[in-house]
Length: 111
Image (cartoon, helix red, strand yellow):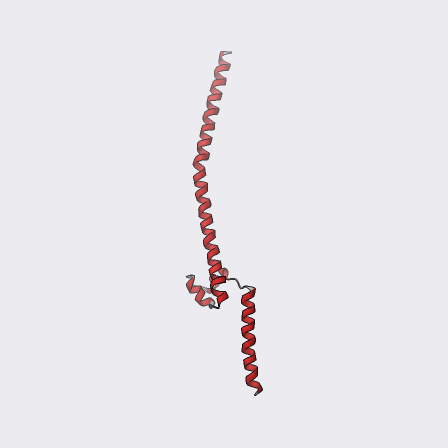
């Protein structure tokens, strides 16, 4: 009976220590996890900002892709093409501009 009580208290002691260690491990792990998540969010925001700049701010306003490539610091235009997406409004504007140029050429040949 005496040994069973000692074993019981020993078991409770080790379980309590184990729980404290587990809680400390979780508390120490939490700031690290939050830091990693913050870094991932910052990288994602940077990536999305580059896409927005390349697509909405520059290409949609008529800036050539070569210029956008230099603005983003790329040495290869293929890298810029990853960030730059052609929007439907850009295609529509380019087609209207082309139609205007073709009408100008058509008028020159009618005379």
